[in-house]
Length: 154
Image 1 (cartoon, rainbow, N blue to C red):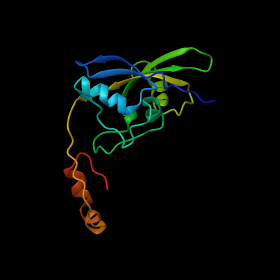
Image 2: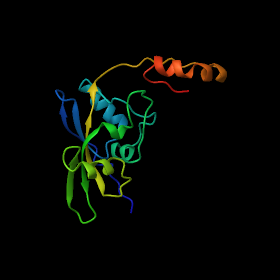
Image 3: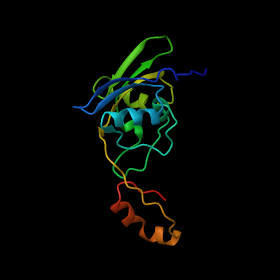
Image 4: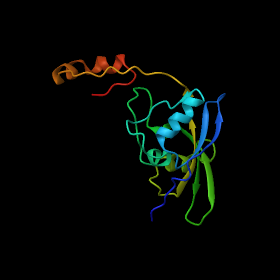
């Protein structure tokens, strides 16, 4: 079965004190980023691709390049699922943590994710230093490059 959640694309709640935002599952990541920026907030980390939906990126384990941050799913602090029978479950790390842990990267196996609450942070700027480097130099220096930069990719 193919579900189209593209019309479930709204920001439902923003709490700037706790840095938490609740969004509908069909919101596309680049739209989420723009909405967060307007609130002075940002995701801790995300992948290079920003055309995925929030639920799609979370459910498939999408990750970024942050040295000290996990996959996008690790930023999830709560979610809403619709089960096959139509019942709606709300889960978090505090409320049914076993189901919550599986549902975050569940590939839809437990149900359809319809809303997600994310732990975000105050907006920040990254400076990109993109340039060609010889592979031998990268391999020689990779440990120091990773230690010196929060985000590093080659």
